[in-house]
Image 1 (cartoon, rainbow, N blue to C red):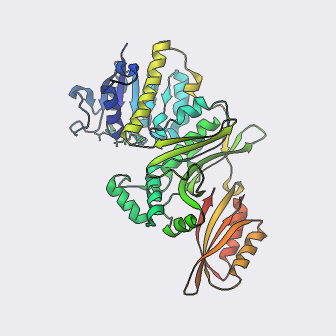
Image 2: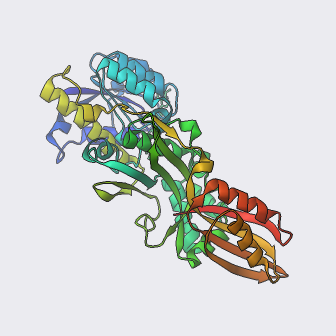
Image 3: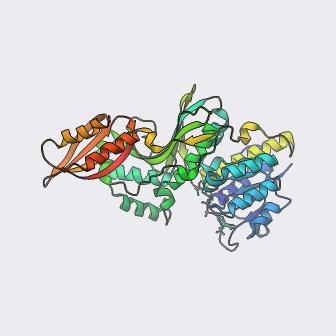
Length: 434
Ligand SMILES: NC(=O)c1ccc[n+]([C@@H]2O[C@H](COP(=O)([O-])OP(=O)(O)OC[C@H]3O[C@@H](n4cnc5c(N)ncnc54)[C@H](OP(=O)(O)O)[C@@H]3O)[C@@H](O)[C@H]2O)c1
């Protein structure tokens, strides 16, 4: 039996999906049973990398959702609206949805999941995080027996490309960004990538799946790489670290009422050079899942692009098609594939979380400065792993401190006292360290 697919969007990802569906040879036999029945675009006259019959294209995405020949709706338009409304419209019509849209799922995932559960349809989102890397279904299904302690990842290829080049060439952030834009690795407006918003969307989705409860997307502390200086990448390397934009979701404990306490955040992070994520370079992504009893499992691969992302989208379509064939169009939902929320989660106030830190201070170059800085940290019970003076010129010095794991509140209090020392000209950089 042929299954009708309706495609919302024929851009980078949509064209990749259309290409797979129109070339089933050598793939899973179910691919040959999928038929592209309608495709929505903004401009039908635009040249496309895939050849499609003219009558398939429309500028009316609702007509694709409503078309009785369309059994599965694939949303690869991007953005919040009309994507959210189209997904909800498909669900209301009882049609399963596949989407690559992390922005919509991070903000409206709960509304969409509730509507899908009520209507008894699947909404699958494998392509929304990590492009071609299977991570959504593994978290929902294959790792389901575990207590997940931490999910940490490099889940934005643009920033990883920029950081990799800053590290290998000692280049400045602005220069590498301009080059990345020229090569098509960074958008003309790179804000969602370089300010960390894209990674925050993705880690909120991973945290929701790992911990079974929805996460308030807007509450995730997010810091990007746009203020990162080449000298900090260099000093980190000299101290045995690489700097990566890390997205982390960590389980800290449980409230008496059973609400899970989570620390979810995105920020540039110093990773020891032997950390599993430290060797992930260029536009690649990787996600490290730490669970009990599985231990550490790492997922690595291409995090974006037409091929990898459409690979994940079509896998979701195949999952749905396979279930439809086995159970009939109105078969019961497989609870693991459907995956809803089963717990309450809350983000712990950032002052109460514990981290290791990197601090770079610009100071006057005089005897006793390091001792006074050490005293300020000591008064707040912030223990120091290393303190190194890096550069001395014209009566100025740069001092880099790496702390042990300390509470964020104590660290901030120590830093305020240090900033008030007459010898300290400025607290030039603070970064988290793993
Ligand atoms: N690109 C990647 O590597 C990647 C990786 C993972 C996830 N994703 C996600 O996948 C989604 C699609 O990304 P993309 O890179 O493929 O985007 P894209 O290249 O900008 O393509 C968007 C497509 O949607 C169509 N479209 C936009 N608004 C529309 C509207 N109102 N009505 C009808 N059609 C409309 C566009 O039509 P026209 O072609 O006529 O302009 C275009 O074909 C996004 O959610 C993105 O976050 C992308």
